[in-house]
Amino acid sequence: MEKIILTGDRPTGRLHVGHYVGSLRRRVELQNSGEYKKIFIMIADAQALTDNFDNPEKVRENIVEVALDYMSCGLDPAKSNLFIQSQIPELCEMTTYYMNLVTVSRLQRNPTVKNEIQLRNFETSIPVGFFSYPISQASDITAFKATTVPVGDDQLPMIEQTREIVHKFNTIYAPVLVEPEALLPETEACRRLPGTDGQAKMSKSLNNCIYLADSADDVKKKIMSMYTDPQHLLVSDPGHLEGNTVFTYLDAFCNDGHFERYLPDYANLEELKAHYQRGGLGDVKVKKFLNNVMQETLEPIRKKRGELEKDIPAVYEVLKKGCEIARQEAAQTLSEMKRAMRINYFEDEDLIRRQAEKYNA
Ligand code: ATP
Ligand code: MG
Image (cartoon, rainbow, N blue to C red; front, top):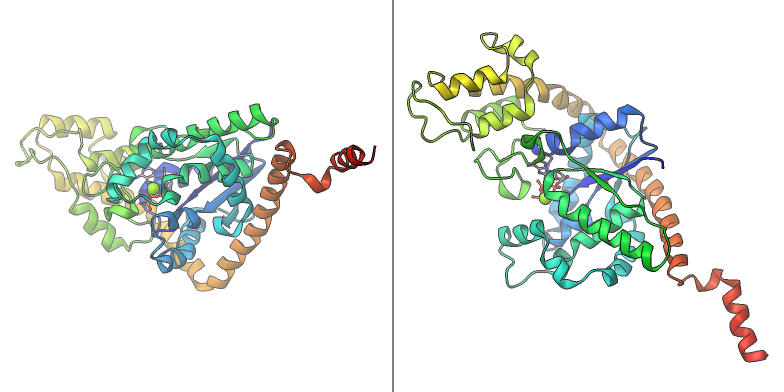
């Protein structure tokens, strides 16, 4: 079977380094591997509206920000189709039919949605659209017959829900849809990068992000004020690695080459960690190293962004073309679905003839 990618992000803010290690970096590698027949990258504005319906300007403003972040990281419109969710109405139609295949109690069990409801203080007033966004996400994935969805680990329950819908649809109607697989980053740190405040997840909604577009100065400031080990008061004290965000970021970003270039006293991260745990290694030194590592990663992205920002209409043009292609693709799948569901009345001459015979026999 040909391999197809669908993945995306909500335009609720600029993209951050959690997106980068969780999904973006991998997307670019996959794009350049040449192994994928088609790649669809979606800006999920309709999903963003499920919890930002009263702030449409925020969503509108951030479309181009996300597109700029994509292209500055190396997503190439010639190889990856970049598009905007709301411009593909077929997705809503699919969602309507998938809603029949999912129970309310199944949605209530989704751990990511549960957690997000808590974070947003929605407990007693959950918008139906927000509650059911995993179903809409199943439409996004299946519309393109995606086999592979590169995401961070908060998205696993969504992929699982999608697989269930696909299985049910294919069993009841006809085998039209493809069961997708999540593609998670290899290391734990990258699957869910914590926020600079030490919270479990860096997230646009939590204000604890290092953004890809942050200036070098801002990145440095954020790193130098990052959460470490509260018990590591004196340099000579033994330090702890668990929950120590600076080390989690090093897990996600650094390689042995960085040690050669910026901290040659250590061969690799294992040695640095061992020293920290023994005592005698100060947080500031580790943070300065992390800053060098992250600046090296972010500098080319910032530079590329600067160039792309000079021609914003061209970015919208990329998205417009992407929407056209995505729409054709989704329409094709929807028409196969409707045939399978027996709601393709006007293209079914047999049906019309049979009904006519019934009355004119
Ligand atoms: P919001 O707060 O609006 O939900 P977000 O920061 O969670 O924004 P999303 O657009 O929801 O970002 O997520 C897009 C993709 O990035 C998903 O695949 C998600 O798993 C991944 N991702 C988001 N945050 C992280 C993170 N901290 N670590 C790893 N991956 C992440
Ligand atoms: Mg999110």
